[in-house]
Image 1 (cartoon, rainbow, N blue to C red):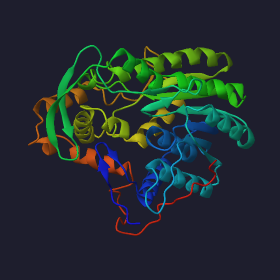
Image 2 (tube, one colour; image 1 turned 45 degrees about the vertical axis):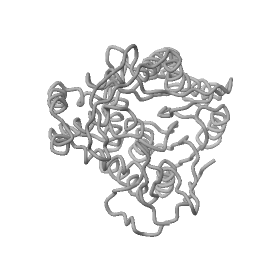
Image 3 (cartoon, one colour; image 1 turned 180 degrees about the vertical axis):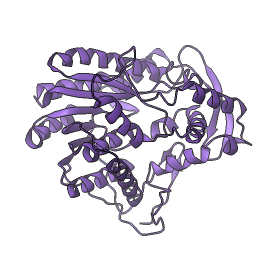
Image 4 (cartoon, rainbow, N blue to C red; image 1 turned 60 degrees about the vertical axis):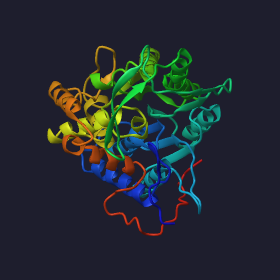
Length: 396
């Protein structure tokens, strides 16, 4: 099959196995070019196939020589359709880990389900014994409650009143004004159910119950705060309520784990191009402006750079892990520097359809969006015939 990108809104419905493999290899090479990390030995990553979850698994495996287990949704290709980018990413990672002599396993299934948790606990018992780092990086718009079967859907809406601001169609460069209606109480509740801390806590309880956590286990999940520009639709909106719940869950779990030397943190990261962020109005325009400023200042980081810094400067540094007044690890510090935000606001106030490519890095945003799916990657022949049916080694 000759695979080309096909888009529907903020989603690319195809992905390229060779492009995904090349990008995984780029991340591996970045980590291998850095000093080795004195970090975890056995790592579980829940939501391991894309974004920060993938970057964390790569950093642990190829930076700290850790054995890893990745949990993610199954997706296989066929003669008529491609698998997901996450599937191809995971296949490439598993292959590279095997070649490097690392133990590496994939559990495919719904991370919210009891069955997936049970399969993962059993695998860890049989193959690794115990894990000393658990990373929860599940990004999903929908959750089926494992106990009741009830289905929850998350929304990306403001709370209390409508919100109006600029947004951009990152495919065309058209800047328009958009108004978002506020979330209902049910929508807020459902968003918290999907994206809050309940499932993270369920995972830790299942792992503790299965006796596969070390006494000094570290567990982290990811959050975002962002700038004043995005506050109404993000941190002060429905997704912000979910992040509040996630952070409260971290504090509760930290109290439970610290008696044996364990710890739980929320990690606040910088704004990046992800499938999730592409779906949030206002955010693509903000990130395009942010990229322009941070690249010019030499401060730009992608997922892999942020994750390596998280491991070396925060999680596995000598002494206490630095946290803010709310107990969160902050690696969004460069994004929220006063000089960075001041310049982003200037761009935001001036940007129009006519000058967007001059004032922002929208082209970089658009390219990174397609790279999420394995396209627009240097060195890949996109006119070549490739097999979309890629197998994942060590997958259950």
